[in-house]
Each structure stands twice: as structure tokens, then as C-alpha cells.
Length: 116
Ligand code: FES
Image (cartoon, rainbow, N blue to C red):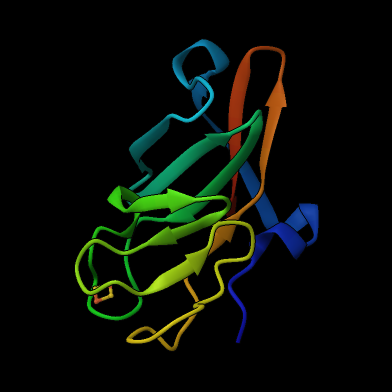
């Protein structure tokens, strides 16, 4: 099963404003509560990425991890994930984490979360 909501149909998503572009500079991240979901949003060289801030291995705060390129390392046990797709790239994680589409409307950064 994939959790890459970047591939989801727009009607299945609700875009929520999470920040202004001035609040998320190049190389920065925001760790947010979006409607009860922990979400980490990144600005990497002007591209925005959003993932669930809950590691699929043991619920670690994956969004706090070290980022290299578009890969992040969970600070708890070191599993790597692709920020673009949410794919688990290395053990001990074997299950993907949600990756969400991000769009900029005016100066607002919006994250697309699945409609429940
Ligand atoms: S909780 Fe993330 S690797 Fe274990």
C-alpha cells in the first residue's frame, strides 16, 4: 500500500493552509499539528515537501531527522524515508509513511490531506 497522497485525485484531498512562505525559508522545516495530524513540512531549495511526522517503525518523530537531498533519517533508529513519496528506503522501517502534496497559493503554503 502506498501513502503517497501526491498521487491522489484532488477531490480526495483537502488543502489546508499551514504557514506563509515567509515562515519557511530554504532549508527550514515546520513541525505542525494539522487537524490533529502531526505533519512535517520542508523547504528544500525552494521545493516544498510534507510528510506525516510519525515513523512507521515505532512512531518516532521522523520529521526531526537529518535531511540529505530529499531523504530523511528517523532520529530514533535510523530508518530512511523519501520525502517526496514517503517510501521507506532502509531498515528498520518496512512500511511507507504518508507524503502529502504541497502547493503555494499567493503567500500561503497549503498541504493536501486526505478527506476522511
Ligand atoms: S521509530 Fe523511526 S526508525 Fe524506529
